[in-house]
Image 1 (tube, rainbow, N blue to C red):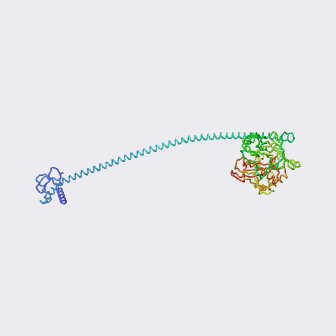
Image 2: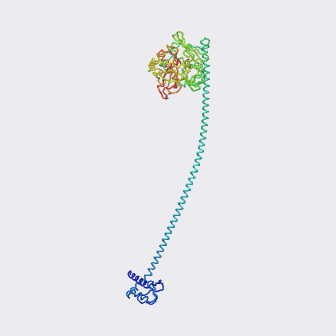
Image 3: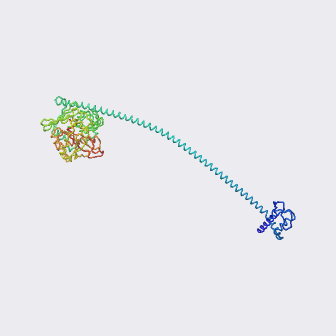
Length: 551
């Protein structure tokens, strides 16, 4: 079939060349019969119109078509005519399908394009919205930041103003407090100075009264209550014995009678008006502790002081003691020794020794100290700054001890202090060298020295005896110290007892004259080792030669 179609196509092309006149095929013209049987003209062969039989015959001749061929051709043409409508339909269907596909493709493309454009539009709108939101957020954030910054600036300003106001208020308050403190301190100092002046005036008045009473007694025209007694063994204690009473702040005298009072307390009762713990004395001091032989008082400034019988040390078995008590509460004690020597002591109404004179058996008088004279006021800041060097007695020979005891003071400091000032002012005491009796150690709560410890005082004992023998006006201060364990009032009374025990041992074992020694306890006020714990090194005894300090 393909070959036949190709032949027909070739024949048609030849005829077309031979007969160049062509017309467009019309649907009203029949196809020409190439077997010579065509009767109606015009007719059409392959879209070419033949109007005359001769034209068709020429075509048939040129093609050389036989009857068989013509028959075959006619048959094929008939088949083609049968087939042609179907092909045309298929072509038309294909065209329509193509157009439909093209339309669908165009529609799809258009839809996709529209979808893409819509998506792009949506994306653009979304992007624009997001950008707008971002810009709005940034603007809002910027506004928030600006507002926050402004608010922070405002807060900072308010805080700064408040801080400035607070600081100004604090400074003002501090200045006011400083002024108040300064005023209070000034007032306190003024009150203290006024109190000290008042007490000094009262002390001078008391000393004047005591001096007048003593002078009258010396002249033999004083009114006094006189008691004379002879000291026996059972009236004195040895250095290895404890005191009969304990040191306590709780003991109190029975109300309404004085049978429970010691002789010393009775004398205080007469001179100061009270000895009961908690009572206020005539001079304004408050009794905070008592033990029979000692009373601890607290002055208005809060300072503690121990009151005792300073003559207890010089009364020895066999001595005759004459006590003259005057109306002002002061007294004069005359202790006569078996060898005829005498010790005359003037004591204030609180029992404190004011003046002492030693008269030997030959009648030679030696004034050891005299606080009845007007004392010069001490300005502590004007005193020489002394580097306190402590000499340990146990490791020092007698020559070195003697040299330490005889060390000369600055000429400007000699003979200008009262015994009271030496006892009470630490900076004054420090002007005299300190010798520590390091071999003496007291048991806790004890004021006794065992004989083996007392014998360790041999070097200092012999040195003191020799020193006093060469100069009977020598005065030795024996100090007692405790650690910081326990109550301050207890420690003060205990240290004073220990000082008395050391002086007693020096007299018992080495014949150191008791009238040349003054004992004083300082409790925990001068710790050698700064600790609040139990420290044996703080429980010590010290001696100083204060002769050159006294007037």
